[in-house]
Image (cartoon, rainbow, N blue to C red; front, side):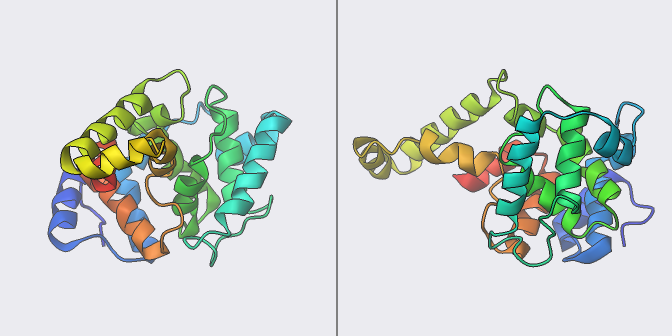
Length: 220
């Protein structure tokens, strides 16, 4: 159990022994690593955001479509409710209400799915997802005005060119540029359509190792 352990101690413990493999104990460890106690929801709770704050039909349509899509992947096809009354839709809708500048962007669905699948409640999954968006660089990946994702794509391209020059040259000759796959890698934090145990391990390491730099290294 991670009870009574501060974040730095938990990071060291995770590096030595790993995080809990499943269930509430792992969810608690993720919450501590993310600093959920510092989450800010603008004075509105999860249910108020879900039920009382208007979200455009265009955004809701994208959330509905991608919530169903999330549940069809290898990662989440077992154990995730993809309906409009399910926790994943609720988390994404509430976040869109909280942060209309971002609203909803494809890729958020997979990260939010990990936050809710073993959570004791939809609200606790929502708080974890919000804290990730607020406390790491994750939100910047989904902000169309932010240059971060372009810098990360350039870094991946340079790493592939340095480490596998023949492959890089061949891919460029075929017109298969890094932009063709890197966005799909980065926005769901590499957890798209991998076995759930792998997705959970990647997500835990993302929290332990400090964010997107780890995801880029793993992707390359």
